[in-house]
Image (cartoon, rainbow over all chains, first blue to last red; front, side, top):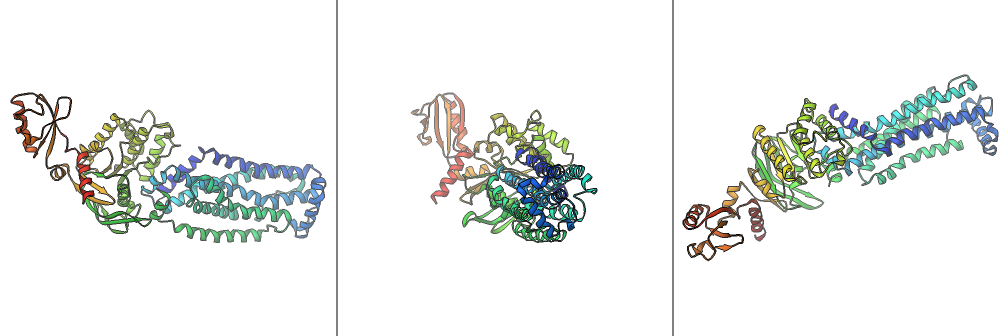
Length: 274
Length: 302
């Protein structure tokens, strides 16, 4: 593995992200919207609004129901405490996962398909680069900004949320084993799944839009999680999160095996360069 | 330097390259000629090891193209028909990226010197999406030369260049070949440009090498008689001109004369000068272009 080559391609790709507005806007707007503004608004609503009047009382029912499935040990005193706990420690998790997954998918699809569209893939395949070095560089170039933007938004979110809710709870939120598992296990593995899916899809489609649409399927499980969380059908406990990461890891291995079939300059060239 | 033996390649059930064999000695400039779809680009891709042959063997400097492609690509520079450069990057950024890929030492100096050579120093900070075709082509050539390759493949290198640009690039290629012994394979449709640059030629038709050799060898084989256009005071019905020369007026005070061989030219000139003037003499059937068509005609008649 030639690190110099991997670094050169990854740096080139990451630099070009800032020149593609449709990609970098996602890296800024999505984390701000979903990762900072949404949880801060929920925290503010929980602190300063009358939760019992929200959604015509249906929220009360849901929160009561969730108390039954051991929402934070069922020890929270008021409805507002329960609301904040539910929103930040449950609903927010799958929503937050959307940030790195969507961004990684956008970057990876754009990176592969633009090399094809601009006929620069031919230049790369004519260079002394191993195909696996090319794939690794593309993976890094999508992972670093996608995961980085998720991390940044998490830090910003933790600060803004805790400034609001610390006086209520007397302890910090968005900390502990669950969030460590999310940030260091589930999200990195899921981000890689999104990238590997995008690589597979990009190798089979011709345009950026087509690639985006097909790779977009990766967000469906997250939508499922959001629905599951909001209905109380699935509660993301640390154990479930650890399992989720493990399942995604297995999926990644399968995807890598599928991609390895393309790890042949001959196959890649004949499929991608005309 | 390059040796192909009985190389075949099919794509989608169609034979693209059919039992091709040839060698290119170190330091030669070889013209690879043929119509569109003859397989020129496929041969370059096979030699570079980016696609694999179905049969036969390819070696470059003793290295097997199928097994040691990276070593071959490291010593090669390639200019493809599409420049293969990043339009959202400046000329300097493009060269810096490829310099890192090829592990170019002292990249700043090398990039500066190449940008000067291809006349792009002034435009080095502009994104190349806004470059003209000629500028992109010059930058692609600079990219191919970054790592001082021992082997150069140039697919239509003068496409989009103005006459000055064409002359500069061809002169530079000859200079590189002379000073650094760079082995070069040139594919071009503009045959008269190749005539003064190439040492030998490979003629490709429907995936087969139908002829090869240097200009003198090809002339001997395909231009047995010499057709001359002579700008002279003599006329086509001049009784002093032997009828065997088949004199024919071709306008503007020029005569077309057909001689059995090149060695007859001094005799003809002596005869003409004995009674009239001669301003210019041009062999018209010995250009690379006329030989190219003759080679293809002969092949297609077989």
